[in-house]
Structure formats: structure tokens, C-alpha cells
Image 1: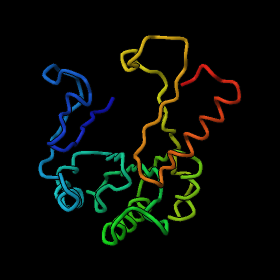
Image 2: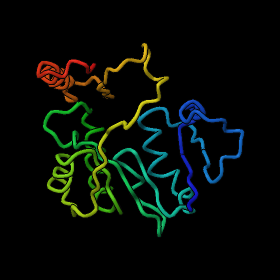
Image 3: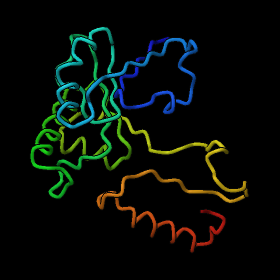
Amino acid sequence: NCDITFLHSDSINISKVFNMDLEKNIGKIEFVSIENINNKFSRVFTEQFKLYSLLKKFDYIYSPNNINPIILPRGVKSIITIHDLLPFRAKNRYSSLQNIYLKFSTWVCAKFAYKIVTVSNTSKDDIVSILGVNESKVRITYNTVRQFDSNVIFHPRTTNKYFFSISALQEDKQIDISIKAFSMFINSGYDNYH
């Protein structure tokens, strides 16, 4: 019993993302296109300043990223997602200025968040220890896919089972470890997995 509004970049074809005909009445879901957030600076300016007046009508704002607007309208609760605390690591992939912004914003957003969603117990422990937030406001939701649509598999249907991984190709994502672990899994007798 709630209305949902998706704020998205105007460069995203939202009908392809959600695979639905947006011309039809889809109930209490609204899509709002935000212009000019196609680079880091315009995105930061928009999320930290321009969105303020738009957010006044909401009870909650949820971000699939670790940063929401730092200053929210009165009564609006912030829910953020923190996948990892890479900006807080000695070696990370961000420029100095971007790293300072990410560290400060993540820390402030985590401190004032109503809830924090994360992807593992390790990330939860990091959030609690590094950012100093109460563990009761951190919820774990694993990055998993429960069931595939058969149209996603691009080869004949078989009795085989599949591991599915979505990740960036940066070194810190440790894809090599995933491949080695899968190899160990296959070599231990599970040969009908791909």
C-alpha cells in the first residue's frame, strides 16, 4: 500500500530496464527522469542539491548506492545500500578528490540512515566497525538470483545447472578467486554445473 517513484537518469531507456509497456496504467508506480546527471560532477550536484525539493513529498528515499542526499527534507528517512567500503581501503580505484567525497558522504549517510542494506556478513562487520553504526540498522540481502527466466539461457535446455555472477572487472572484485573456487567445486564431483 505505497506509491513508488523511480528517479532515473534521462539517458536510461526505462522501458528496457523494466521490460514493460509504460503507456499502460501500472498503478502506483511513477518514473521521473532526471536530466544532466551523466558525469560525476553533475550527478553529485543533482543528488546533493537539486533533488531536495523533489524529495519533500516522500516518506523514504532508497538508494541502491551508498550515497543519498546528505541533507534531506524533514521527516524523510534514508535507506542506503553499501556493497563494500572500498573508498576506505588503502588501495582503491578512485581519484583523490572522488575518494574524499565518497568517504565523507558514505560516513555521513550511514550515520543518519534509517536502514543500511548490505550484501554479506563481512560487509556488515566492516560497516559497523569502520563507520561506527549500530549493527541493528544493517540488513543483509545477498546478491543472488533465485530463478532464471528460460529465455535468459542462450543454449538448449539441459539438466545442467549454472553459476551466475555479475561483477565489474576491476582487480578488487577478485574474479580470479571466483574462477578458482568454481574449478575446485567442479573437481570435487559436481560435473553437471557450468
